[in-house]
Structure formats: C-alpha cells, structure tokens
Image (cartoon, rainbow, N blue to C red; front, side):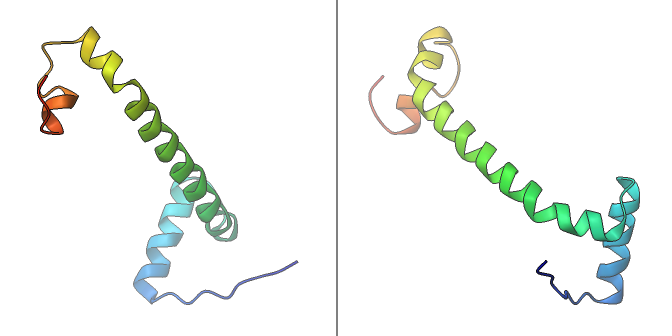
Length: 78
C-alpha cells in the first residue's frame, strides 16, 4: 500500500496531535482522513453553490423583501 512521509514542525505536529485527540482518533487515522474530508467538503460546497445559483430566482420571488435581490447584486434592473 502506498504511503507518505510528511514533515511537520514541532508546533504543527503538536497541533495535529491535539486535533486528532479531540476527535478520538489516532494521529495516523486523523491524517489519513483529512484529504478525504476535504474532498467531500469541496464537493458539497460546489453542489451547494450550484444549487443556490439555479434556485436564486425562486428565492427572490418567494422573498421579495430580501436585500439585495439577485438582480440588484448583478447590477440588473429588478
């Protein structure tokens, strides 16, 4: 199985150890999970932003008093 050697300063390593302990994980498991969680987070953010863009008009219709409406943010006439 492929592996990585990652270099940390003493302060960085202590911070990573503390984060792992806070999640109840070993240092190895915590460092393993980080890029996987980041990938999931990035996919979620991309989906959520796209969803918001696709439904912005519906939101503006449902909540006309919200400031600023999408058209105003883009500099268009409402």
